[in-house]
Length: 224
Image (cartoon, rainbow, N blue to C red; front, side, top):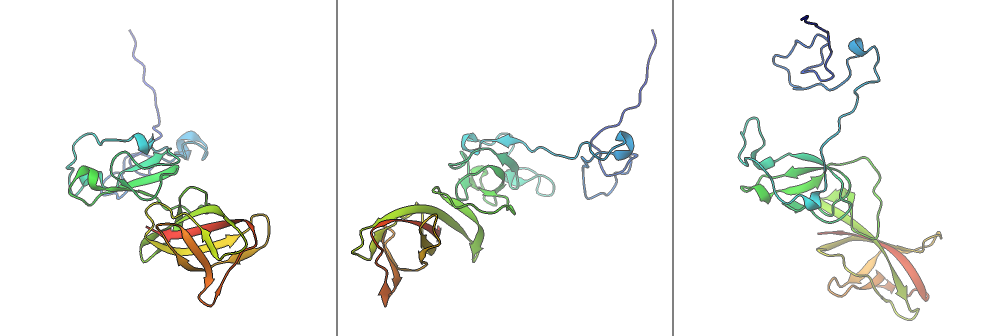
């Protein structure tokens, strides 16, 4: 019987060191980049895939909820996942806005495991206002701004139009009324808006807008 030995190189190192021996007192606990010396290329092992989960079906946290204050998150505060759900809310904890695909983290400073809030990790991607609630890239006094797109029909004889209030709205931030496919922006002001009924009057106290009969587009921005 003979024994064989071979030399292997791990793709994951404790720190960024080709000898894989320098570990003491390093702030970074893991380095997943490619070792170009071992692989003879810089094009290997560049990516890190996060756990993927549908947060709408994530209904309970498993394991110990206490953690160690100096090294392990108490009650899963700071937990990061890649969420695959395109709408809805998380099955456990609160949700900031509506779920969308991307990276989300669990912000939990509460005294219970389920008392935290799932929040999207900020992205440099452009926001896209849709007919479902959109979490914008903006805040006002630390309050999140939401957006939604819709249409309304004007009869040509009254200043009143109906713009349904999104669920949970507490204050209006802004509105743009236009016609898609044209260069016509009709108004950026609301003189009055009844959240309970959606009744809206655009314009100013001195000049309300009467729209010609037809269908118009709007983007509503609001706080909740």
